[in-house]
Image (cartoon, helix red, strand yellow):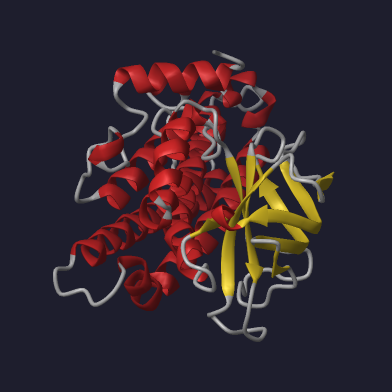
Length: 345
């Protein structure tokens, strides 16, 4: 059943063989040894090229599968940590668009340090009772479940004692308190409150008290792809700025905006940063793939990535998002945003 444009895009991409590219072969993917690198290249390409030039430009969005190649951190988490029943029922449902979950780590009072959680889950009646709140729950407007991380034991700051739960949206005690205002309203980023929400033991994803490992499989892969997408968006803005500057005549003097150094210098500076960042993102993605394929690896690959590459992933993500805003600001100053074609219209 097709409910939206993105549903149709997902079906067409799946029929064309692109949608499952980054997944293991068991789910129709290619199990490519350089998956992180390829996904970074793809995300950069889709966001850096105009629609009629083979990409999506600023329309590219990691959260919706008009991106052609699906972004599946939830499937990877189920693949690595789910029970046989969870894998069998939920992964195929996800690929059909019938299972969708948010990622409930961030809280209203706790941000980047995921080990300090106010949300708790207590054992009761052959299950768990969850109380707390989660913020920035992307996709909450159409999700079927919330993936909620809650402390089940241990003290604040401890890496042990955090458990991941797949909480159905219709669970009693679960309420969407608000949808947060952002620059791309209308938003799907919700604050979700849980007031004694009870879930059975079968709702646990992975092992009790070991949920932080699950979060780590999501964060680094998703962040490096987000960095690539933001870097590509910066490239897109600068390319459109250059087109506009070359086309705009200046008050009959026989010159264009592009002939003036006040336009040239800042654009060249930003373009240099884009190219340097692009290489840094691709290099970090390649190193992530090397870590995952290392035959001498002692323990899960995401632990090694957290230990050895988390600083590089953070640098890529931090600078890409800032650079994207700087490039967009420069595009506005050059004047290209006055033209509808900036948005691929």
